[in-house]
Image 1 (cartoon, rainbow, N blue to C red):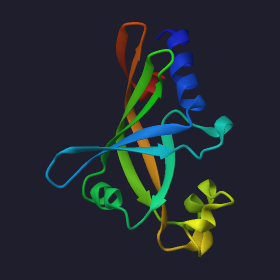
Image 2 (image 1 turned 120 degrees about the horizontal axis):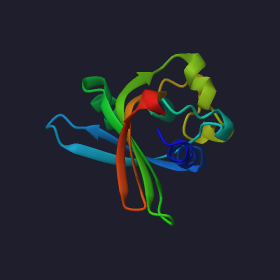
Image 3 (image 1 turned 90 degrees about the vertical axis):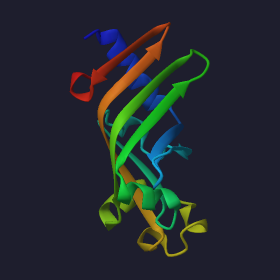
Length: 144
């Protein structure tokens, strides 16, 4: 695989502040939601992506019923995007929740990292589709 393309995919992932998360509702229709990327910039693995959310949200119910998901990162200035496809696990263990906890989250989760309504999505990618410069290529995550 082209090392330049790998670097571009990694760069897009590392620089993104927002990701678009896709789920499937109980009727089988796709659902998209923008989510903040809270992972430390220098610790963002290419295969595993983490997002924090409310356990009471409808997406948590969707992912528990059907873990198939996608995560899309975009650089709209360069018309580049990386669509990762895989599965999401809803994590409620303290260690995973603490990993993404940031000062200020108390406004949403008054009981802190142990708040029952606080959870983390652990997305594990299987493939990535990269679009840039009129090129559209799909790779196994193990190729990246």
